Length: 60
Image (cartoon, rainbow, N blue to C red; front, side, top):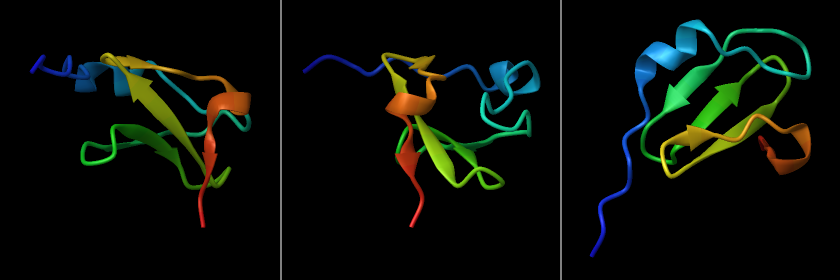
């Protein structure tokens, strides 16, 4: 089994939500970056955040 690349938390200082330019929270369990203000969760794939609104999951 291959190991999932680890997301570098230092990237959180540089990344903002593309929808409303707010800060993001790291959800390690689901490998997502959460924008509470936008109600979106951006996936992290192979250690790389996918910061596309079309790829984000809407929060319940």
